Image (tube, rainbow, N blue to C red; front, side, top):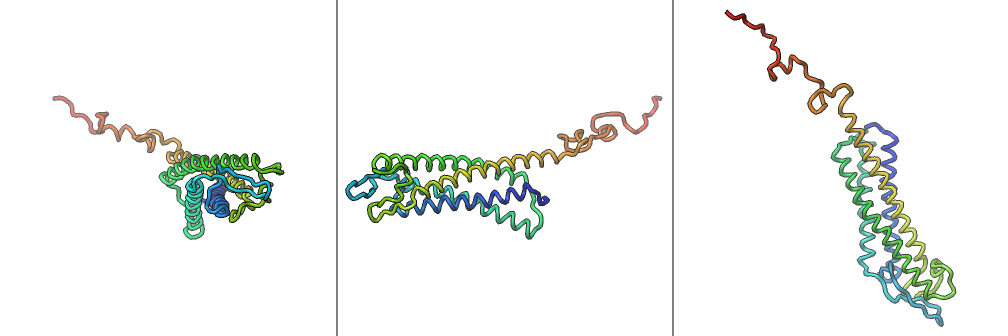
Length: 235
């Protein structure tokens, strides 16, 4: 396969998707670590007005954040492997072959990843909004959830930059979703192009349209057509 713009675009999408997966996993893990291993998505907070300190009333199960992290890491690993494969073939083999089975696998993988990225993106969005709703309801003297980052949290919790990090993790998921949508479209287009290029123009008369049309001389011995052997006269 020649080095084309579509191939370079595919390589860039895999590399960018890898970065997005790592960004989501890292930011979510950092926020979870700052809150003592708690998953603050859909969490509830308390507020001590006298001490001006924010505490955690309840949090989600840690497995919720682990699920989002696992999906992001899985997508990142697949993208890293595909990036290495393309780079190796371009730099070492100097050619990239496109098998129909391989393209079908990537199309299927894109569908699976789009499904799980949609779920994780909604979880991050709704979970962060739920946490911010609790903060805005209980914490005084703030006009946005982002301002709670400057407040003091009950030790040993550290809420510094929690909103920004959750927002970046969510943004990375939606960007990743968009990348895999493009990857799926590219694979479908390339698969159709390869299918259409299998049969040259004017060769529709053969078996299943895949070869040249048979002549009458070739079909005569099979279908009982006119024979090239002269007939013998009746005596």
